[in-house]
Image (tube, rainbow, N blue to C red; front, side, top):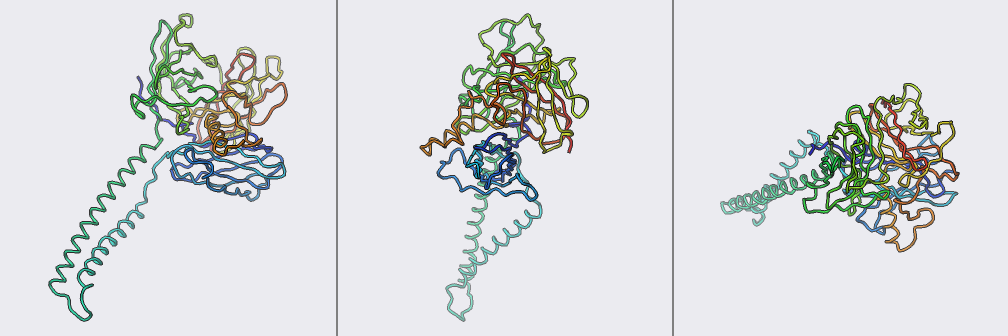
Length: 501
């Protein structure tokens, strides 16, 4: 068993990115998520090619009917720009939302649903001066209320011109005492309500790993099996974790060797009952590994990344034996011990695989915080010819990004870093609740089986380039793993980069 490694869904990288078609418009959309709830999400849309006449944004909560959604807000064209629109939306509740972006103009109307997880990442402190002001006002209201009631009980029954006597003073004191007791009880009850509400809020904070996950390696013969238990604390021991598949898998598990980061695996554990999942470990070098597990909850449609760490034992490759736990055919891994890793902005950004395939990162140097990371890659075979990429779990590429200290992790696709399973849920929800097809501009798609390719449509027989929308959230040193499939072989290239302010 291991101590949990603190993290979050797309650990330390809460912003959401989309790159693709919105009807007949090509657009790149960035959603900057609030760190508190309620909070305002900031949305920007950069449209390529023909410009729309209007851009609209609207939020839809997973537990709210489509017909009860608020009216859309109009996006504003940024001054000095010709194709960049922005807007803000309030996210009022904790849970899963979809941000609907709608473009209308000469090419018709198109819209896209981009799912986001609305969870508080922090609790904002009350400024001292504001707390002092509220305390003073509260005391004024408290004692003012007592005095008003006492004066009313003492003098309201007197005829004009009569003086207050002993009976009236006694009535005033009795009324003041009763009022004080009632107000004190109200303050005690209010404090208890406040504490209970704050405790509930703290349970919703996602500043740590969620849900909780334990990771342990057991041996079946000479084959190491990684066993995961998810949500034992969050949901209780007898609760079966309800998940929906993303790209046809309930879990997407990443193993990254701590420190040198020269061992990497992208695996797909299989449920063995309730909250327990298992997966055979590939022949990775021994050591301690960060475990990052992407999942989407069925009821809330919240997407998250559970985290932990685990010790992988030393085993000769030839000692591995077949077990009752079968590996997923889409499992992949790579080892980079002793292999130089190209680093931006130093040196040539080309990674050469063992079969001679070359992956070139065509970045715009330098890479800066909260700017387009320029994750554009070209893949060529040993003879220098463009390769023909084929779908790997419904996408032309999967990528993982991690900061050197592990404080940032993100799982990317060419279409963006949102959950395809959540997007499919909202698409089907819209179709079901409106009792009609959404239309040609927003088809209902089974994202687990469809080839999403890259952010924009590719119609040619040979696709060898990859583009991923992303912005690094903080400065630091990062490693990027790029996974793609040629013929029936999954390849993994790796790059390092330094991100500056």
